[in-house]
Image (tube, rainbow, N blue to C red; front, top):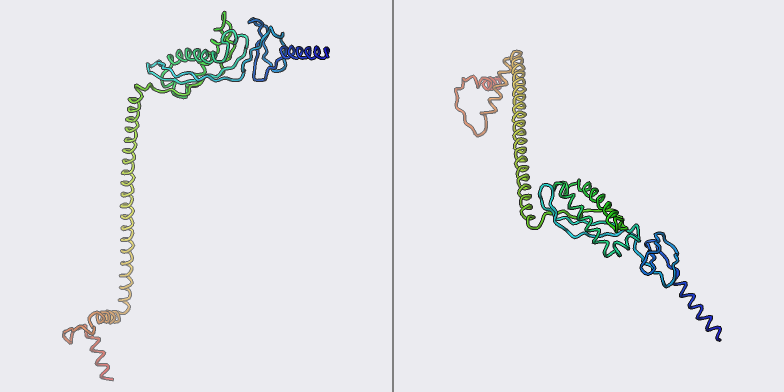
Length: 297
């Protein structure tokens, strides 16, 4: 029984020693091993690691990409314009020992990165016009800020060493006018847009009138040409009708005179009209001759 107890105690002690000697570094972590506060080793690759039990301790840090939202700040551009810029930075831990010595943990790393970026951003904005910051050339501005921030992160640690981090990206989320002048700026922008809109409307109205005038003129020209052509065709037709009429008259004048008399009879000889004329009038020639022929028969 005594040996069993001793064996159990030994097993427990062995398990404790083993648990204190072994630790695991995840693929998303880096680790630093210290002995009584003094650096012993660092691990940047994942896997099972060893340390001296009880006297050595392990500090682990997240080596994934971190983001820090930099508080908005006022900046003055080269053309003396005020801008409120809201930016953010992304960084990761590259040297766990330098990171532990200079920044200690992620809570301190974020503000430090923010200070570095803000300092470089202030210098860069002061050398650029407002239009460069709020236009597409902003990407070039951010590239210069990123390059400067990366250099500072590599040289501002203890004794000029690295901070143990790499600043991967810097972006501007928002670049606005200060609240004190925003309303006046928006009023000027609104007035300018109204002026442009009125100018566009006036130009549209001028174009409309010009198009309508051109259309009316074309209508008059088309109608005039059509009337002219119609008159020419009508004149030719009437001329041809007269020629035909003259040819017919020349062939049989007596028949034509008879035909015209019949047309006259159709006009005035009706059941309701009374016509008083000399019986010897030329108009009654055919009526009289027709009556006499009838009586002779």
